[in-house]
Image (cartoon, rainbow over all chains, first blue to last red; front, side, top):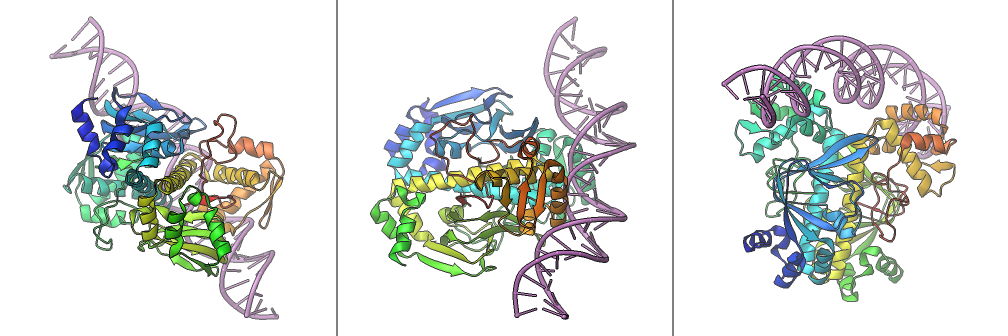
Length: 256
Length: 256
DNA sequence: CGCGTTGTTGAAGAGCTTCAAATCTGGTGG
DNA sequence: CCACCAGATTTGAAGCTCTTCAACAACGCG
């Protein structure tokens, strides 16, 4: 692995508190791989030998049951994934597929666990990463159980807007059928949900979406600090850096 | 706190690998509390100062949005909860309410974090606990997104059966309206879902449920090792103790 | 015994999916 | 450059799932 890559990795929050020795041990056997779009990285049930860190590209995590399939998350850089399975040395509960050409760092699970047991500061960072992932999923579950499909879409758009700089125009960073699956609906229903948001100023043109009436949209969406992970609103105490994102793929960082 | 209580706590998997010093430091300021049924322990958004460990009784974790409320988990002993918020020193994403008279150990968040940073073995245990909780939620999300209400109920019953010893009769360990909310449906719909399972040999009498035709029920439920957390079936490699449960309240251990 | 809560049942309707067909889109090979 | 194809998206129609509202029965508790 090149030194410039190593520097990039050293700078990840995950390794921020690690001792140099730990970092060297953990990344010693690591390697950086490029995969084309559509590559299956992991199947549900596979034993997990590596921690994956997505450095570039896009990865979809999916779950299946009875020939049905759903998208659990769409990850963008920089995201770790299947960390929980690695920590437990267990098999993966999710499949992973690249959506775009992707650059992925693979870190030996054994080395990671050894590093954690050796270096409490590093282990604490991993715990924080895991805790952030956990909270992302709690947000997901609440989103799914408490909101209708149109409400989920409205909130997705509001969140996208915040993450893409707050402008009127946002870009959906993947295919609509993937978005539909992520939001827990069929592609047809997503199409109709967009049509319903017409009344809230939403105009769709391919992957471009114009939020013509953000206030009205936001009144429908009613985003909540305890479900959506925007910039923390007033109620939330400042100075506590939460390392969490829920798997909206517009995220700066995310995890799974 | 009494010595016998301390011994019970020392025996928890969470503290299995901890040094004595760590254990003493972490539990030093801890206290054991009894709460009557219906006590609100935490509201969504509350800052979290303690790690909670449910030693006896039953606790419901809930999420709300727009006057709607859903049950995220029903915990039974021995379960930690809001560990993720404690690790991140963040506010709670879930409310917590006792369903029964409950005995709960409260451990200072500060002490816990100090212990984690000091003792890598203990920190690793916490990581494993968190990872198990994470995987429980992944199972939950898959359950919600991939299965219909009747299928979720069928799987709930099959899982209950396994956890309650495999007999024909199982007991729902809480009110049906709580179960409905846990499974993501209305009480009315739960009632009708039970009625539909009549064709699969399911007979309901209050909290007692007789699974008159387990094979047929199981063919409908189609439980999966990657969603449901039964005794690991054949595919799953043995010897890897996964510390995870999804929040079915019949669980021996669970977490959140 | 009366009361409030919980659970069940019926009817109506909203929400979502399914299937089918039409339309659009990007990429390919000639 | 253009025709063509495969896949993605949209639209329509039908039907299934689930919720809502209302009424009623069952239960537990004071």
